[in-house]
Amino acid sequence: MSLSTPLSILSPSGAALPGADPGWSDDRIKNIHRAMTRSRVLDEHVAKLQRRGLVGLWAPAHGYEAHIYGALTAMREEDWLFADTRMTGAALYRGLDVRSWLAMLLGSGVSNHGGRAMSAEMTASAHNFVTISSPLGTQIIQASGTAHGMKLRQQRTVCLSWFGPAAAATGDFHVGLNFAGLYKVPAVFYLCTSGDPSLDRERFAGEAFVDKADGYGIRGVQVDGSDVFAVYAAVADAAKRARNGLGPTLIEGITGGVDGGADPVERLEGYMTDRGMDVDAARVGAGRKLRGLLQTWTTELLGEGSPELRSLFDHVYDAPSPQLVEQREGLEAHKRRFEHETLA
Image (cartoon, rainbow, N blue to C red; front, side, top):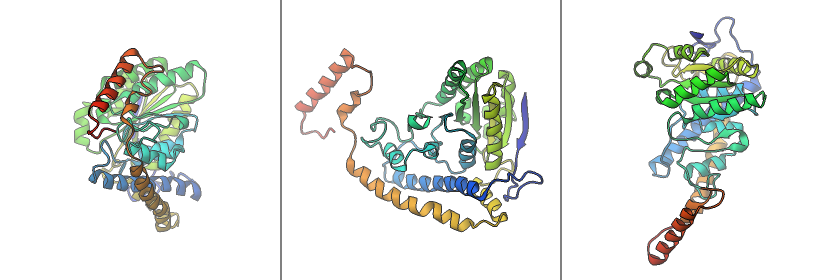
């Protein structure tokens, strides 16, 4: 059954609603504020790289920070993450180092994927972060299947999959949710709305996307997606239910807040101010060092160059097929014939 009343804990100004104060410690609040602030620093840096033509595919996380970090805080380290192209910062939160993240962004030959992926298609399997795919909706069906495997192995782990309205209109969404509902898999499916209610109603063919949960026989929850504490509460509850064998949950996170205009970082900072915390010091401390490191590492990585062209044939199969060997030899013959051409 869907629960269509949006969950909120903070007012648009950041004040805790009556009886709803989350009661987090100062250190815990600082940690999530640091993650959200650093996300904006990363967005700023990538925007500069895009203007220089150094980055292609990229979807900024600005305005989506509560969706990302509220949900992440509610998950355990052993849980698996299935992100879309806005959620690359989730890998950093899980433990991927920033230089490795930047190397993948720039397509460096020394990156985790060898420079053979689009800018936002990052991978961090060591941190249970599944490779991001550009095609819409693939992570939904992957999360559903992986969660089923966890259930068969009697593991108490959960899969979290984020996606947007366009992915929700794909066949993979239907297949993934139908499978998840049928087999009661331990998964949380989190929709981040676009922030444009009229456009979302067009895509969803209804007032509330979360109502679709009923059709798949799973629980549905609507949450204020600019309220990091509300997102945390919704995902934590959904993950607990999944871990205890109660099946998946579909969460609709409303981008921009239920009032349509709340900024997730400003909202959290409003709450921090009410608590007497030094917001300016927290903001400056989170971004200053990171900006310098990003500049240094970008210069270093650009100096290391692109991956070698012949690496195109690496990691396609465990052992190269005859066709692959023929193609590689053809490339080498072409390079010998046209040595004056600048091929990597």
